[in-house]
Amino acid sequence: MSGAGAMTSSEVQCVRARPIRTSRIAWASAAVVLAVFVVVALLMKRDNAGAHFTDKDQIATVVIGVILAGLLIMPTRPRLVADAEAVRLRSFLGGWRVVPWDVIIRVEFPSKVRFARLVLPGEETLAIYAIQRADRERAVESMRALRALHAAVAR
Image (cartoon, rainbow, N blue to C red; front, side, top):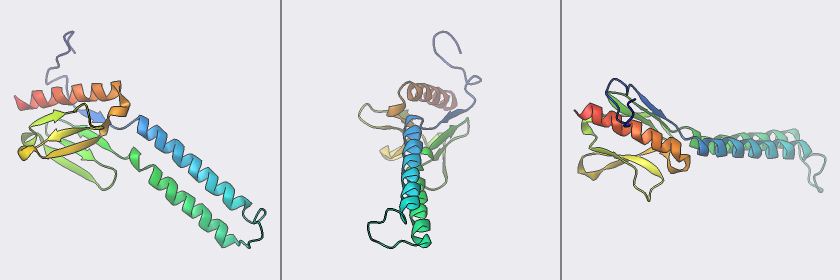
């Protein structure tokens, strides 16, 4: 990279981004929820306050904990991979969405929104969930690299 902060097209090969802060919170929350459900399942038969719990109830409690923990880690899924051909986005659910550069008008991150976005023809926007305001400096670096790649491809 040059000292002025400009990037040439040969320096910008691929831009990758994923949420960091949200992922840490999600993993910690999932671990706590799973631990609570496992502890509750283990203590069910002993401290039951008069109710009758079976092994099936214990297993079901752990399964519910696993399901809830799985839902809590969904914010770790978003990804962005951009190269000279296209931008590839993955959201909280589903697979990858490929957006060719020739349909992208601009890449923006308005001050009052949580996620960066791609602007397509007709002012349609696609949220880039992998670049989040919560990631602060990392989000700024990702946006600079993505804008530089967009500028290099637009030439």
